[in-house]
Image 1 (cartoon, rainbow, N blue to C red):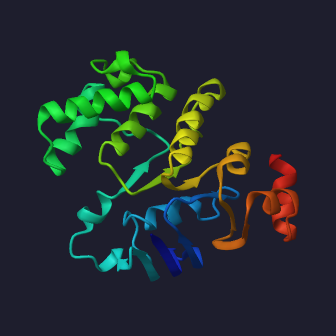
Image 2 (image 1 turned 60 degrees about the horizontal axis):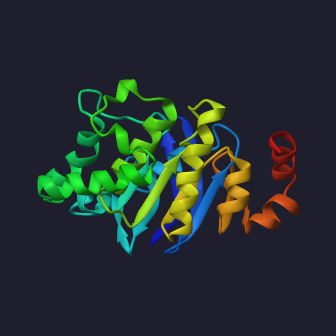
Length: 239
């Protein structure tokens, strides 16, 4: 569904991505791990057009995202959940979820409300529809952010360190939602520092360092039989 072809990305004099190539097949869960500053989030943002590659291509179902005539049509099919929630503070939880489906998919208000109720139930937040985002805990906000992304009925979900801004006790609830999505067959590309989640849920794990893919493979091989010295050093510090 997604194909990254020799992508570089430069900010000023800093080359953040240095020729990344990878693909994401339908139904796959791929986690991207690596040290801070290794280009993980920049790579993810290139996958839905929030960043444009300096060179190379990102293709969604064969279409170059950077040159697409209707980038919004592609983004409607690629949901993204950010580290810091980015909920609309002046809207209720329900309005956060229904706004985009009503305005971009043309859903009637009654249908959007029914969809919001279903998603909030799935997230364990059935009683929070009329609440203000500021009244929610961090974990609840992130689950609302996931519900908002899912309300657009995307084909692919991107998660950019979705738990790193949460208190440890809130992380489990969000990871449980992500595990359930994986079990249901959602195509997912996940940047994460949660090694247990990456080991348990991934079809493939990609380790990035200094703007390149240093190593990739199935979770058992990456975590239990790492090949590169850099990955061995990284895992020795995080496991």
